[in-house]
Length: 450
Image (cartoon, rainbow, N blue to C red):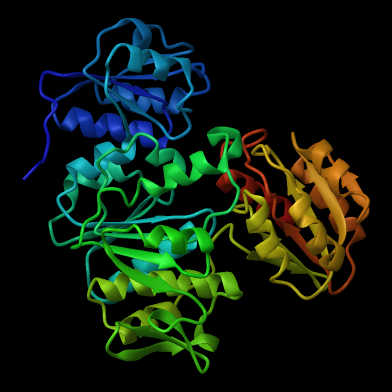
């Protein structure tokens, strides 16, 4: 049974990206009259405009005049729209409720859902969790920041399905009633400070994923992260810890990953059988195991699924080996900690390509890792000057106008045994639509190298 109806209501959606389009289609199916408003020009949004208008959904581009002046029963905002946007402040002054697309979609869902958040590792953990549920024979979809917008799926899933949702802090800013059956909090490190302003505001946004859980739900918490471990003390859900040296939950014993439910300790798989390398992927796997086993999946089924995993696009993805030089696409590394994880994953000399749109912090934390692992640094995008200023005293640094120039210069300097690594430590929005486009462009450039 559908949980909500918008019959007779007028709803404005701010932002014409994937989540905005999904939200518009969902609201129309639920009887609402929708306007999708975006400041970008119609030429920039031609594909989206054509798609929406073909379905009878109104749009405005290049401004928010109708959004600002007309009467609305509800506003739904895309994740890219800051809480400080003047239009959102105007909605608040006019007492218009503001929801995220996540809030809208989860209200429409008829099946349980899992929310996965954290500064790093969300996408990989989401993929792992979906794979385990599918191995157990459950109808499973993944959505959110990965795959389709959740609102595209909400009305079409049966009650026995399960949805695994990658959840960002942006999506949680206007999500007052979200209540996942299981929530995983992977870690918390400085990120998106350009948006949230302070670490405390960032923490608060992330923590909204847990706010409405109760004793029937599960909170899968990284006990190796001090903030997440502290947060678990206040959780109303059943806490399932994971970490590298614990007495219960998901942890390691004699080279195996095990699940200890407080009574029985059961082996999931050998650490050596996890096909994705790195300590960070081991932590991601433990989080996925914690989610699935707490929701009834047998530990041996979880192990079977994880042994079958393939490398994930844009996350330490080997693109090509040319003249004994390996080229890796880690475009998903949109913050400093993700790039540190990448640098720790290789033993050979690294030619690092970094840069893009910074997030309000510094790159100082990269210094010890550059000193020990990086032979040359190639900087691009809006943050190139800052990267050069903060890091060029450690390693030879080359500034490039665009990604192609950086790749070609790295290629010309690479020697047998080197790794050329795109791991930007920055968002992509200065030169690309998203990190996926940046990664695909990198792969195309590398494939054309002679």
